[in-house]
Amino acid sequence: MSDWLLLPLILLAIGIGWYLGRRERKGSRYYELGLRHLLNDEPDQAVATLVTELNVDNDNVDTHLALGGLLRRRGELEKAVFVHENILKWARLDQAARHNVQMELARDYLQAGLLDRAESMSMTLAAENPQYRSESLKIALQVYEQERDWHRAIEIAKQVTGGAEEAQIERAISHYLCELAELSMIQKDPESAKDFLVDAIGHFAQNPRVSLLQGRIALEAGDPLAAIRFLERIIEQEPVYVAESMVLLETAHQAMGSEDAYRRYLEHCLTHFPSISVVLALGRVIRDQEGTDALARFIANQMTQNPTLRGFIELIDINLGDAEGAMRQNLHLLKDFAETMIADKPNYRCGDCGFEGKRMRWHCPSCRGWASIRPIFGLEGE
Ligand SMILES: [Zn+2]
Image 1: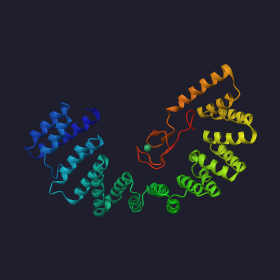
Image 2 (image 1 turned 60 degrees about the horizontal axis):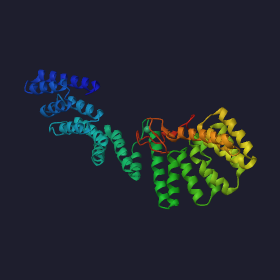
Image 3 (image 1 turned 30 degrees about the vertical axis):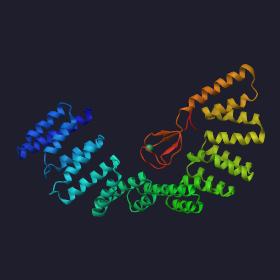
Image 4 (image 1 turned 90 degrees about the vertical axis):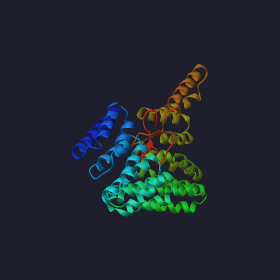
């Protein structure tokens, strides 16, 4: 058992002992037994003894609550639920204390993945006690996010108003609408998708995900000019996501035959927010317009300013074109080496919790933040 848990549990047991000594003697046998289990590093038996044998009353509700909270933080969710449900069974619990325990239980249920129970408990509490309304609604919101019930999530999020987190909630609503738009796109219903995205802008005007989706819908509808207009907003909204738009943008400009305009936009991006995706895209335009030598000069120049392995691989590829014999073999070796170095590396990282992955996600699966995951920059990334 870890020391960080043992100390609070012992303090808790001492608290119970003090309470028993002050009030009555009947529970002291169980207290002593519980403490002995703790000192023998037997937390399961200690909890069982302290919780099941000590009846809840007005003087020790806080002690039981503290024990339940401690167990949840330790990840002992079944025991935390047991402790909190045990308190609720006590008939003489006043309303304020009952609501406090219900709040704790809603947190236990959510963390334990008992989503139906978490939803029911938090929605009841939100209706009954204004003091817990905001906190309860946020738990319900997490339930609907996990169930991917975006309509219900929007409905509940709109009820969480005021407070410092309002901007964060608005951004979340914008992403719920993007999720609905993506579902509509899968169902081949672009008109509904567009409506959801217009609504998403109303909640977070600078959402780059909206621009990306609008760009994709326009391109699929055969309107590359509109797609370009949507996609080129991203550099002003959140330049870190420009790389996500490169493939769509290149396709749209090719369809329009507007290579000069595309080049000007890429040069603008490179000045304001350099990334290897932009460098490689601009490199392809330079090759088409000025030839391979100009491309090689451009990439080499960029690599002295912002060296990345992807740029290095591109440089090797260019040189492979003319190389022969041993030189060609060596370049292949270097290329394989560089590719191996980035093969297992993550491309994206969550700025809030550090979660890493190969593909872009708008909702962090670890900390459940929205748009907290971004492309990784540096030698092995963008
Ligand atoms: Zn995260």
